[in-house]
Image (cartoon, rainbow, N blue to C red):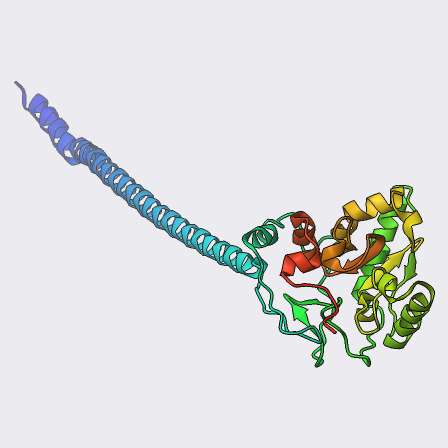
Length: 315
């Protein structure tokens, strides 16, 4: 080998170590380093995503749990409130028993039978205050000499009204009659108010005229003595013809079957003369409010039978 060849070979080797080798070394390890960095980055990204997903899942689960708990608490509160309201309604609808306070008719108390109480409890079809034909209880007066039983003012042969009691026709009674009249008209029936409130003095004139014409015994079967007339209470209405010609008419039949839907009762029904003290009057209705008219109508009893009182002149 010549010196020139050796020098050329040595020079090539030197150039390789000076130029090529560092470049290849740098390229080899830099690619490896970048690969490792890439793996580390992917690992951190995956771990962060998993952590975020886990955190999101826990947060969602906690939120769902809170919502479910809140919904459960709300449903429980609503159920409790509804139950309390139902209990309150049931208690308010239960009939309140009250002894009669005698007013000119001797010592008399109300003693409702189980049948009467059952009829009162079965009045579930009675309208509620939001219904069109609901009839509120009439006005009550805190006046000596008036007799109330379960909020119902009593005026018959046993229980009288003070001579100076002049309330006029009760406004609620009048309004409910107008509803009755309007609904009857839609059925092609003509019902009108013939007689409403009568004062003590006016009733005295009417009664004395009947006595003069027919005698007291006969007059007492169809006309009340002054102070004993329901008309003086402002809660009684006579409709159409005030005589037997009204009996059996379409208006009379409809009135007997439907007047309770507006808070009235047929006060002197057929076959109850010995109990009420008066002959059958198909034209005479009495306002008591729908809370009372429905159970009384359902019982088939007169006011006297329903409250366990009598009706006869004690003197």
